[in-house]
Image (cartoon, rainbow, N blue to C red; front, side, top):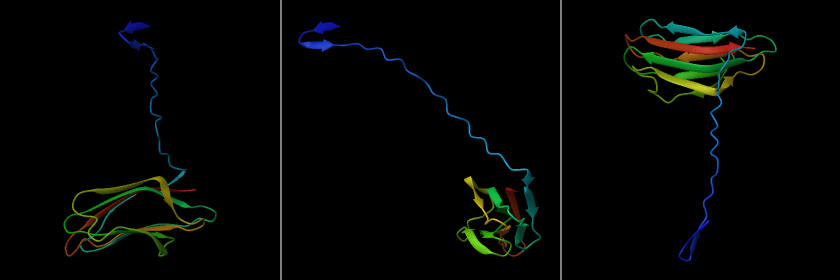
Length: 135
């Protein structure tokens, strides 16, 4: 301790501890359902993951793009079931647009899932990539 006039300066040395960030690793179950599909011109893409009794479909990530034009992405609980996720109009365009869920988007137990990329417009193709599993 040093006295500087009427001010007392106290020097403390506090050790600085550095904590590294814990790595987060996404893993897929044993029943991997990854697929990439390109449509014919002016055609929507529907990728259906079939239901299995007692299991859920887990959608980890999806990406899509159009050769020209724009489109929307719709995800349904069950094949041709209730919509559980939908993008705004023109959300998908000519650059790759990706969506990923930290906690996967799940179907109900015993239900499959439809992932639908709408048509990209007259004469245009669309590409849909999904990363999913079922367990």
